[in-house]
Image 1: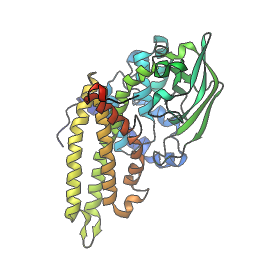
Image 2 (image 1 turned 90 degrees about the vertical axis):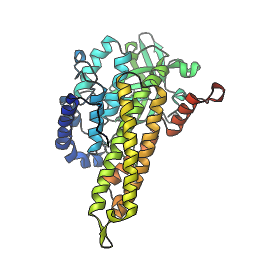
Image 3 (image 1 turned 30 degrees about the vertical axis):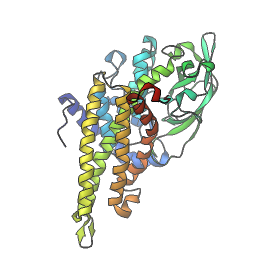
Image 4 (image 1 turned 180 degrees about the vertical axis):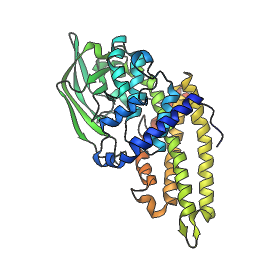
Length: 388
């Protein structure tokens, strides 16, 4: 692949420190985390101490004062080392931007310093049993009662939701207005009426606690409203570009890493008096995957640069998310096949990566929704479909 030119020397130094912490403090324990379906709070605190959380938070709020490229480094190194458990991406790259972009000064000073250190873990409560990609269909309500909101509803598929002390909740403050009646409210998990369901048993991402959340007459101060009442849907649409780019960053590094694992395996695996890599089919498959990964790397890095400059629009974010996760699925399937029977054994990283990666075609908006967004951008208005 061509040399990457989007990172500065400072980012490279930071990458070395992040990779060292991951190797020393996360890799030896990840198997245990998968057995327990939970990353211990201690790991979050170590990440916070190392400046791995909320990289873009300014120093005024206790943050590292970094940029999106620092966040990219963290995501890449976690998945380069097969550390899929910590929900740092949700916490740092999905919740934090809402506070930075829409939060009041009081909210920023209250929550950001705690999130930076890892003392407070944050998750996103958007999805519901009957509303996933169709965010306008959420049913959770928040009724104004004097200086408070009273929330009722259920959230599901909440990544990091079992451990999180703070949940950014999408709710209907005007149920009659559809998408135009959605607001975002921060809810502390220790409030009466807030309950965590069991940890969901997923196909992959076994170390990542994913939970159902139930809210029955949960009362929060009106000052927990993020941004403007009934403008939550528009806020979500704006922030989804970064969420989708983060999915692409993860997919791309997994593709590159899986190819390296497969090269190492095939050049050392004997079969019929040769190695698997000696067969033309293997060499051609590896060549094809490497070429596709190289092309995708150029596009992902271009989108990272555009986003860092504030120029990544919703359509490009949909394109990079869709194409990268589709390539990820194809490459992991080919790589597992080249591992033969061992590729199906959980002890091999390719097996875990294969299981972990399937969610990427769903999370952050399904591939089908991405196609809808892209088609709406390129077709005449009379030919466009509905996108939420």
